[in-house]
Image (cartoon, rainbow, N blue to C red):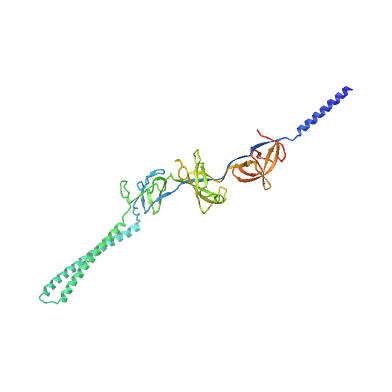
Length: 398
């Protein structure tokens, strides 16, 4: 009888063990989750955009007259002194080349000018002869006027004839000078360009540096003919730099003069402090890399502490602070997800997950300001997946 009960007890224990094994295998497995602790601390919201450096005042040296520019000896980076350093030298332009037809016309004009000189000289000889005759007539009239042989009117007529002859001589001499000038002009138009000597010193205009600084860009390096206003070189003081950042117009309205910024990504190990000086009042259209038209606005920043390694048109990253808080409750952005129109998080409380709605204020790339729903020290789940739900079990991932 005892053996029967012993056998029954063993079967009961085996059945209980099998049931316990099935219960253990089918139990709810806790999910492994990453946890972050809600804490209080400083927080700031920034706008981060790419910008470039530029010299605050860039002076473009240009040609004040048309001429022949000598080869520029300055190069980018050379230091210049205001009123002393010669940036460029402009010589007179060479006469143009003359084709056969133009040369024939100019030769004809020169021969005509020579003939005009000959005619003017012949006219001078004629009027000089007339003057001599009039003077002789006046001398005879004076001799005859004394004894009363001729009247006073006859004497006056002889005197007037002398005066008229003298005026004709002066006019003839002026005509000769005029014709000779025409001849010289016609001969000058026949001049051909000649090779410019290396030691020829015929410089008309020396362009001097307008400020103390360095050469930023050389627009005309080689010897060449330049027109009026042609740019030759850009000069500026690289110790006086500013930052230009083009912002989306929606971001530009969030900043203004005096906004604090930091400059990074310029190649140095330290961030450089800067302050927004102005935001341009007009926007411009810019096509993004995705082909989307955007309205952009330039913001100009002043560096509070510069670096000698920075130069003109260097690429930088500007991070402008639009809001900051010295001590506020924050939650990591990866812990937030949407439930309807509300922001929600999963809390880990005693091995169970609790879904909770939270009020969110300002947000940046890493954290969000918590207005209500969480307390310091709460453990929230990072990157919650679709396999976890309210009330399910979970353990912290090591």
